[in-house]
Image 1: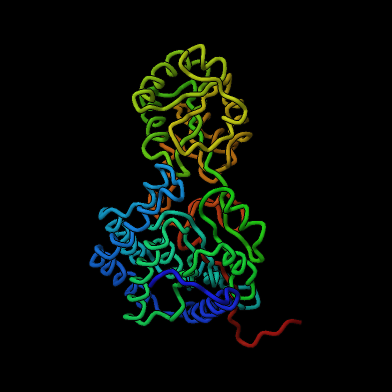
Image 2: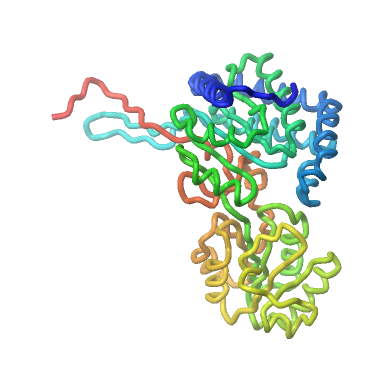
Length: 424
């Protein structure tokens, strides 16, 4: 199916949202087995449809230069066979997760005999808008349906052919297993105005979830008439404490920065205690130089690593998504925490320390969605946390924070059982 020329955009968006609302009502009570069957069949179709996916992806890769995509963005766009297999495995892993809908979160029996249950329910209809990562299409659809939600997918123009091909296979699987029509829909236009149209449809759409650059997320947050689950940037830190094992600190820093640079949980800033800086900074600078990482540091950093450039205030606040790392030397763990809370984006921050009290202080005082002790920031990920896939990593505090898996796409309601009680 080619990208559509839509004559009446408002009508198209309204009808799409209405179909999703109808599907969400059915999904809320759909048997778990039907959802599992869809996930497993979709995984099969992704594997058997690799040639169609490769053909569609080639169109997007060929068009990449006209969109001025960076190397990191092209890497996200590419659907190699290993990426398709990872999508299929992701669907199977989500299928194996416990059914969230109907779970009794809490219960009590009141003195008058009323049984009060707190029961997990779907949020309803998700409008998910994201940029050039076609693998996210399958992940998002799977998480939404598994958690009993209908989803409207609006991918970036850079990946439109790949996304359309993936959704065609998901729709085929839905038809085969009897998933409600409209449970998974793709916005089949690259017209930016469609986003605004959907964001106004709060009568039908319960939650908007943007995943991409800061400008996209700010637009959605400003225009949406419904709640938004969002994160703006991933300015993540590694703090090397005075008691750190320096070999461990080097491994963690290099991995956090270099394992994959164009993602939100990659480290963008290194903070080092002054007691270990004279030994650690030259050592880690050498390891990072071998990986072509440009360093930008404060005065104390540059006295120890002469090749480092001067770091500005903006450098400490920047999510580079590339081969640049800012460095700050501090006098105490308290100063490290202040620096991270001031310049960070409340996404993921790590401490390397052998001091249990320092670790406790750090995890208590750093105000981030994920705070990690003695491990890489790259572990802030739904799959790594055992959630299956994720629809995004939220830096909000309401409704969800951190990786958003199937439980984060649910709410709850109270169900009360009585035996004729009336209130006096």
